[in-house]
Amino acid sequence: MPTELDAKGMNCPMPILKAKKALMQLEANDTLRIEATDPGSVADFDAFCRNGGHTLEESSEDGGVYTYLIRKAS
Image (cartoon, rainbow, N blue to C red):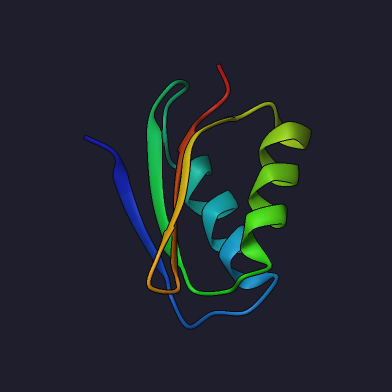
């Protein structure tokens, strides 16, 4: 079961900063599920995962809410 992070209503760079802090608390290969409303978070989380070695397992949008599932780098 992934750890949940509610970043709705936050603007860049807060969703990324909150996700980075949450990932620091997790073990390698654990997952973090993030919900955000900032449209810029799509590109931000893609770059964040590529640069940090994490895996962006899922990315979706529904009614202006963007959901991401990130697997922490091992």
